Image 1 (tube, one colour):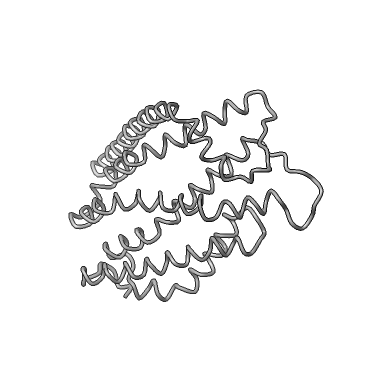
Image 2 (cartoon, one colour; image 1 turned 45 degrees about the vertical axis):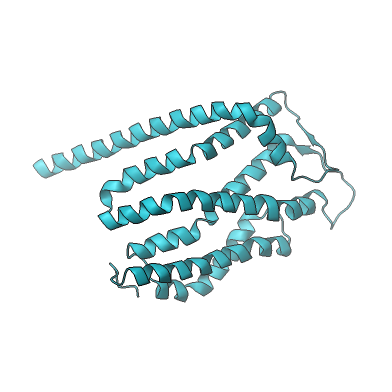
Amino acid sequence: MKQNKDKVLTLKGHLEEIRRRLIRSLIVIAITTTLSLIFARHIFDFFVSRKPEDVPLVYTRVIEMVTTYFKVCLYAGVVLALPFLLYELVMFIHPALTRNERRYLYLLMPTVILCFLAGAAFGYYVFLPPALGFLLHFPWYEGPSPFISIGDYISVITKFLFAMGLIFELPVLMFFLTKIGVVSPQWLSRQRKFAIVAAFILAGFLTPTVDPINQTVVAIPIILLYEVGILLSRLARKERPAARTGQG
């Protein structure tokens, strides 16, 4: 009976901690979103600059421009708050980690942010121009002119950039999982063929076109990231000869 009571208290404690951290995170996001209003116009122009010059953007609902503008501020606020959000996540899982696992996690925190920004930059500078050119000048059927809603445009752009940022975290995740003994370089190498198939499937979901060239442009970096992850995994294993699981 006492053991069940302790479990209930532990569960309540975890839920209370989640609530506190969520509240703090929302407060920080509110602050960074408010700060984003200062340079929101520049962020807006930054997103819009990827579209072809001959394609105008319009809005068809009374409040669409206003809501889209504030969505851009919210997205910018989340990015600015990313270090704090990552800190809150790490602090939440902190008690469940060993001393070495905590040390690895702390060291990787800056890398996580840099990888996310690198992924978003890849999507913005490398992939979006050809993808938008294909979508907005559909080569298989000519006739209708594009009449693009600003809300739809911003939504597509931000979702894709966020997804690319997460995908670029793959090598960091593989390195950390190897460090704590969840996976091994040998096991990751054996999964290479599945990773290649998964990369093209994921690229199919991420790519808003049916063009295999654009899908390949997205799939190849994912495959390369997986290979980088294997190299980092081998490095992690050299520094840590004893694994916690027997996947090697």
